[in-house]
Length: 90
Image 1 (cartoon, rainbow, N blue to C red):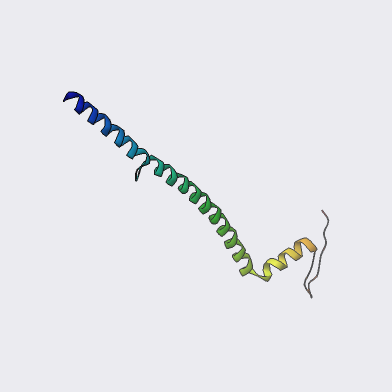
Image 2 (tube, rainbow, N blue to C red):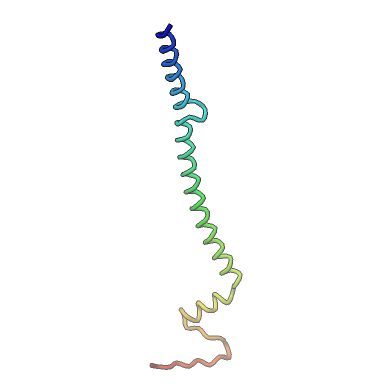
């Protein structure tokens, strides 16, 4: 009788270990979900950075011609009609 109880308990421990490893909500499933979570977090980070870039582009486009004019003045030395250009030397 004692050996039967020990054998039964031993089989129960083995059964529970197997369920823990490969059963629903087990260790294997937890690892798979952890890997999926890491992939989704990386994707979210990439999309957040892309959204930030697009938001900056929207602001630039909303400013419109002011940005184009400022770039033309600084990079190309352009002036408007009717303006007087003064060149100073330091």
